[in-house]
Length: 92
Image 1 (cartoon, rainbow, N blue to C red):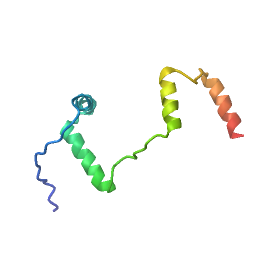
Image 2 (cartoon, one colour):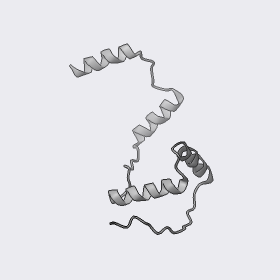
Image 3 (cartoon, rainbow, N blue to C red):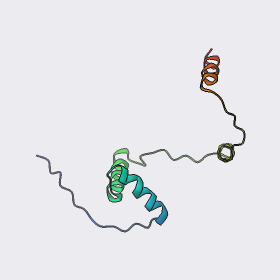
Image 4 (cartoon, rainbow, N blue to C red):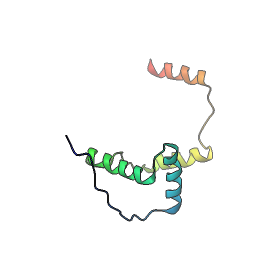
């Protein structure tokens, strides 16, 4: 029978206090403590042999598009029906 007991140690991590509070609120919705979430992250990192998510740095064009979208520039309102028609047109 495999031994599933783990040895836990205490460690100190410096965190942004606002980010920590926001993260704790999110994890609480899942019934997960901050410690549990960090352990989940570490477990996934070990299983993936790296970060368990892709890190992407947006290029200048993407950054500009994000900034424009936040203030409503270069956007238009489109109905769902028009979107379906446009999608069908693009697939032809």
